[in-house]
Image (cartoon, rainbow, N blue to C red):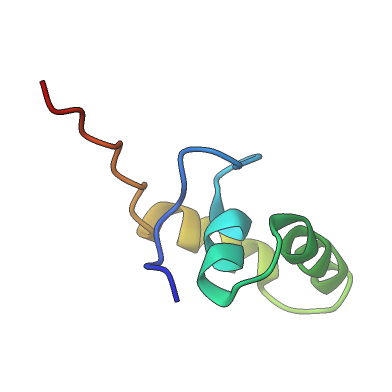
Length: 66
């Protein structure tokens, strides 16, 4: 499993769904659909998304060696 960090590529809003998709080995689209469907249910899904957006570190850029 990959480290939990928001990727620089493949993100739509904050990169949370893309990070979770990488972590659990699914596609980002599948994770986004699951999030939207879960928002139809009662619960703090949107607040959890915002918290993960703030708490998850952004992926570090690939360093280029000169």
